Structure formats: structure tokens, C-alpha cells
Length: 277
Image (cartoon, rainbow, N blue to C red; front, side, top):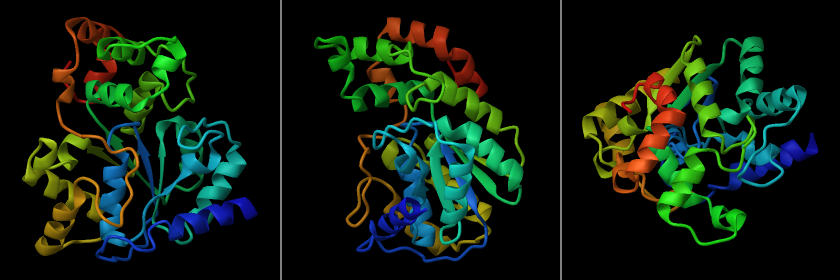
């Protein structure tokens, strides 16, 4: 219990000198589940800009390796952590490697909602290949981008189902959650706006949808404020893993062999998530 309270206290002060927000209030409690490298920090920042509170990360508390959570905590500890966190924060976030625990928690707490974030899995693979600094170390030699992508696409490390890096598992879990009640599916491509290669209209519609999901109606001026402050690194807001976040960046990085391998390994999940392959 003491460990949980100390972690929550640290999370509260992480943005003590933070980016201004709308400071809206809500009675809703929302669990945010995301595919790793799909824009988790971007969606978290959106929620912060509306409510003035950053979604509390589940993974960092339970992981044995900070930022690379292995979801092997007991259901009891998971439930206790979420219940404590929801007392003072409207949103808690984790990746889909905590999906099994999340489903049981929601079954016991059906009044809570679930916010889902997905992205074109080809861009997820590119972002993962650039982010993971351990690939060359694991293989013991320098690698080309094509080789790194091959390793990511084929789950080269043989990641377990509950690993943060098992892309196929995350995609399957995301698909299963879309069939659940009280869920809202958000796509990175609709959230990132023109600076991320999408449209301003789609971004503003997504901002409005997310706020309404929390039971809050935003004015046009408030939506404009969130939109203007959402993209990129901001003074007073830490997004540790942000790199580029561009729509369709995979087209500049995938080789024909990468694309063929992707379609074999992840093509079905890609289509089920509503993306072309």
C-alpha cells in the first residue's frame, strides 16, 4: 500500500510546473489502453489539456524494468492500484499487455469506461524499431533499418504474450476490446492533426469525442486551445518517447521484403483494425 501511495504522489508532482490546461471536472473514470508506439503520450497530453491531470501509468508501477512493463502482477494488486488511482484521477493508462487484468477489472466495475488507442501497425513497427536501442545489442552487430524492422515484425525476441513488445498480441487485444460496451476507439491518424500528417478537422472531432466520452462538452474556443497545444514536446509537459509521430512514415522505411513479411505476420490484424495492408 505504501509503495502505491508514494508512486501516486510522485505522479501528481511530475507536472507541478506544467502546461496550462482547461481544468475541467468529470465524474467519469476511464481506463486508457493503447498499442505501444501508437501515440500514448499524445492522447495522454490531450487528457491533461482538458482536465489538468496526466493519466496515471499502470506499467511504470508494476514493471520490473521501468518503462518496459511485464504484466505479471496479481489481479488483486492490479485492482487495488486502479481503485486507489481512480479516487483522484479520472484516467489511468496502460498498454494492452495488461489487457487480461483490465477485462476482469471492468467486469467488476462496469460503470468505468475504456478508451482505446490504435495506429497503423506499419508505423507502429517503424517507431518501435527506432525506439528500441537493444536490438543491435541482442544480435551482437550493427543492423540496417530493414534488418531492425524484420526483427520487430517477426517478434524476433520471441516476446511473451504479456510483453510490451508483442505487436501481434496487442493488436489482437485491441480488436477484442472494440466489441466491448462503454469503449471509444481513437486512431492516432485522427488525433495527430496537420503537423502529424492528418487533418485539423479530424483532430478537432477527436478532441470533442474524447471530451464527450468523459462527460464534458467543450466550446469551439476550448477545442482550439487543445488543438494548438497538443502536438509535439511542450514546455512543462514531458513526453519521453516522442520521436516524429508522422502518418505513413512506414512508406519511407519499409523495404519490399519488409512489407511482404508484414502482410504475412500482421496483415490480418491490420485489416481488422480498419487499416489497409
